[in-house]
Image (tube, rainbow, N blue to C red; front, side, top):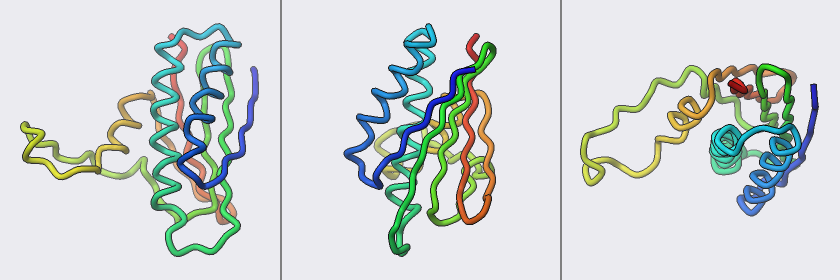
Length: 138
């Protein structure tokens, strides 16, 4: 199993670096672009949510770390942050109206995460959020 770690500043400007890192790690493991795209998109949304919402009202230091474990059967990405407790794995799916014009902006990020990976799990450990995203290699 290949294990990778990336520390990020709580800044949206870090998202391109995150995506490049995911693509590089997946490419080095011989994974196709479809899998790396789905995982990168889910991580982009998860980290952006932490940056936008997780640190609201919290004094620094803010910590975001992404771990990526690539095994023979699956990839597991874990987003670890010291932000506000939030469990996206138990959030109900939003009701999406048929017309784009009729819906309010935002609110689809968690749905996107769930659609991009096979399993979403959350734990709060020692004052940190741990969001685990699993994607099959197959």
